[in-house]
Length: 343
Image (cartoon, rainbow, N blue to C red; front, side, top):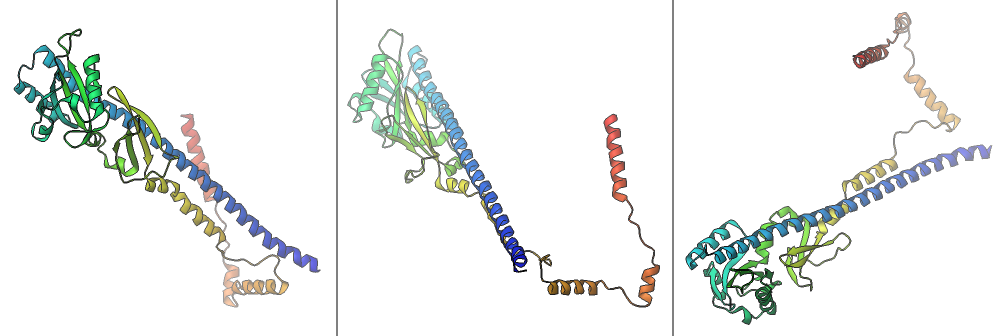
């Protein structure tokens, strides 16, 4: 007798616990799967964004390099015969193409003879590039003169006081002759990159950093930010004229945290709390005979038939037969669908 009373009690305890454990395992599995999906999505987004930044910045700089090359051709062919014409042409392009700090004309000896615009770049006028304090400027100018090809400097401190870079395009009257001069395009790197990547949403989601091959940082969208996340950052090479940069892109900490704490967490724990919340109870099959009898008596009292005339009225009331309305509608619907399919 004692054994039969114990078994139902153990079963009533173990089944809810087992069900609860299965629910926890299922929810945890879904949560982990969703978490990994968010990680993968963020990693893919970072790679795609880095590639788009590379393509856009390369094209942006190539367009401005083409302007400098165009001015060099006009100087070589004699289309720009005076300083006034050079200034007018250079100012015209500066108004159309953002990112330039200056467009200068440099003599064959390396003297900066004409600066456009002059007012903010007066500190560079009449300076000799071969005496520039930055060794990379001297090396880049010498390389352009010796190879007769386009060259650029690394990220340097410019004479105008900004961190930037410069390009040198030889003015060649004939391919086999020495350059008669050089067109010097000067860029402030922050202005150049910010004008190209002007979307605020990009900086709200990512930290953008670009560096020379020796590790010198040329651009950083948030200089105060300290790198703490490495798992989702990507490094892409970017061709900048004749030398590469390395683009480093990584999600901002708040974006990374948001991706790891998605709405599925709330849904999962909400479902978990529902599992543990007690619902409405029904009389147990294994309840004691006295308790079961009391429940049965209350149910019978609630549904007790009325006395007297009410009982007679109830007895004489016609019995309503449920009509197969649902079945009839389903047959009509099925017939309509079959007719439509035959047509």
